[in-house]
Image (cartoon, rainbow, N blue to C red; front, side, top):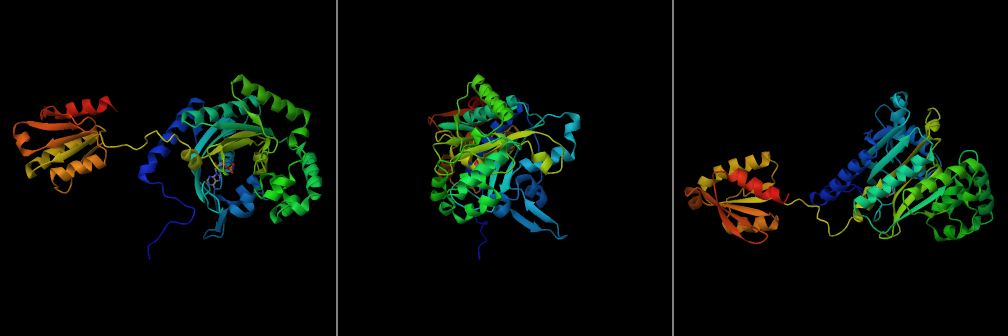
Length: 420
Ligand code: AMP
């Protein structure tokens, strides 16, 4: 029986990879320009890191983690997100002793046991950026500015930045109680999951997609009305800094974000080009995470961009596939060695060149060059070669010229580079 990939795990094939490379390259350029450094963290961590860092009562920890025991009986989990691991690495290597402010980014696969559907997979890729060690609202705005700049640089349109403040450890409990009291009166309207969440993590009801749950929260009290003076000041400054950077935003009082660790600023960027899974990216401040995983009191803020969703939004007219610069069509056994030497030299110069390996007719070699969308074809026939020449055909305008074999390498380099 043919072995297939696991459900929800995707191959990214060569004709798609140009988009991924473009997105990753742009992220590196933009983030490094903003002073961020790449960090690579393991794909497997102790389960405890996520259980404590993300929160026991979240959907991720309750139902979506790929958790298993290794041969020594340790409970390990495939990372469902990167923030907790990045925070762990920052603590473990005592990076804060060198400089308390750390700006990291990380690109890689995450794993969640969710029901696969369009835009929702079990292995998916995220681009994460985090700032540890600063609670100044200027950083909240700075990281949002970087995010929007990046999304625009890759060509996304019709984006909407939504922000909210979730309060802090001091003021959120009062809001939480208010929501419990409010939802208890409507519990008959709530789905089974949300009835349970009412006790464990009532704010999750806001994220529930079930219609009756959405209807139940229409008039729910807003977190923004319950946050204390310090949180209000913080949020006010974030808004001022966003405005000073020329960004427009929408206040979304219903955005509470799925993870337990968020405090104060929360944000999402949604795209009206996407359907129901319209969040391209989300993030926020998490000033309690470090303590949850056993560290000192260190503030943090960050975001995670879903790469599959981002890639589905890239401009359709942009070409990401790299076609060969040159196809060498060879005629006759004598010429093959010459062509082989030439193509090796071209490859060493970084010129994408292809050759026929099967001794096919000129017609079929030209067909292949056409299919590969090669920009030029060099026809090396025995007759021409005897005269010390070869024919170069421009596949775009179909013009042909004879060029001398001597100096062929330089002539080809010159031609293909002109448009590289
Ligand atoms: P989260 O870590 O849940 O805040 O998600 C951040 C971003 O990752 C979301 O906005 C999505 O774009 C993306 N994402 C989350 N879960 C999935 C998934 N199962 N499949 C594909 N993308 C996802």
